Length: 299
Image (cartoon, rainbow, N blue to C red; front, side, top):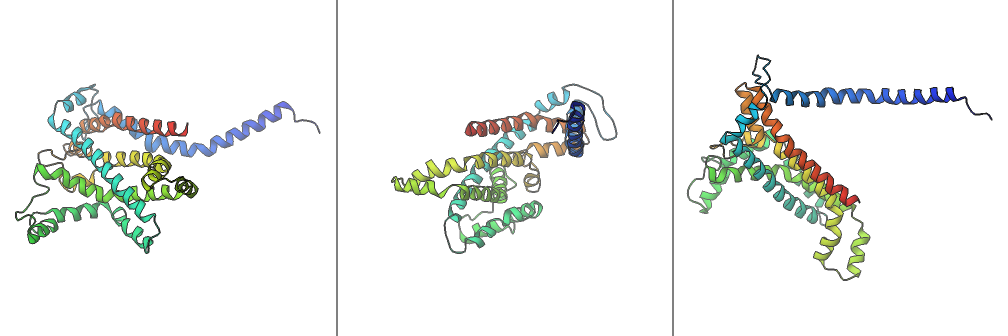
């Protein structure tokens, strides 16, 4: 059987590549239209003095210099870092503990799993408005419990004073977000080979040694990815701060998304875009760090 002529084989290869490009082209165009263009346009706007109704002129780094000179901007940096770090640590502890508990053969654990997913299934708007009602100084659930039981006789304005506002926002954020950690870690626990635990038991390893040397290394990739996603979502989160405190009192809970929203409210589009662009290096470093950890583990 003779081989096909070279020109015919080249035409067949070109047609295959053209067909493959034609299949990928709609997805590429969709990504460029919905992701790349808005992303690049927001960066451009951050270097202009654009306001509502005006195209704006290029002003270089003036928006960034102005923001860096305000106390609210530095409060937003500190508060965003605080909320992300503290929330992720608490979510990791709660999610890991509950996942280890439910992973055991306990009666009714299926119902318990479903119950633990309720905070995540509830719409964020409803969840944080409910927490706001619980925090109310007059008639709020927490103050009623504290005063009626005699634990604290005076009414506490959880969201209205600097000493308690940040902790109150973090508590609500942790309650809303820990189910994601729980279900992710639980899925990772179920993928750890049982033979490794059995071998560790035969070798005389204690419960803590089995967790540290078998369970934790097996679920670490999932913990890294979950930490990355949760950190990005928390840093970009808007509802948990806006619905509870709107960034107050006195910028005690001001974060980047709320600061950008205030810029939009005052119709200074350029400044609002500059706030968002300020977040890009931090999130980029976080993504690179998590990716490098995953690559090291793969190697």
